[in-house]
Image (cartoon, rainbow, N blue to C red; front, side):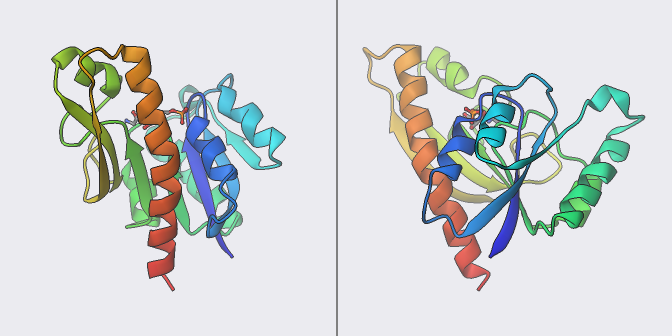
Length: 187
Ligand code: GAR
């Protein structure tokens, strides 16, 4: 079985959705989290997934904490990294160690609305459709080669909360699908 890590900073609904996907073609062996009070940590513990929780401020540099993350990934025989609401820019240390093996999910049709609060950004911009993008990670913020997108239409009467719920539902079914496709191609 292919071993993977999930990186997350927040609620962890995508992490939970991956955990609940019985047909997922890999084992999630490690959660990496940069916020000691993030709800995703409890979700990992409840699922018996090992955690590496770090405080970026206690390291001298991004390179220093990413070196430690890389060591832990290697120690756990992790071959792919899936970002699920990891709200940090991935640096050269991790990108070099896991070239082409770091994937992100983002709640907009990139390149539209990168960065934080993408659902709200789209809602407030008044666009008629937004969506979800899964893409390979490079040194930018929500840039890198696209793997798959799914559109979500914004009903004129919908509230931001309704749109958020719809987008999250799409994320929760799209991410496991795309992950399985990627891992299948790996043979
Ligand atoms: C998700 O909507 C994910 O796409 C987004 O953070 C949310 C995390 O939710 N990621 C980004 O915005 C990356 N730029 P979750 O913690 O409930 O999975």
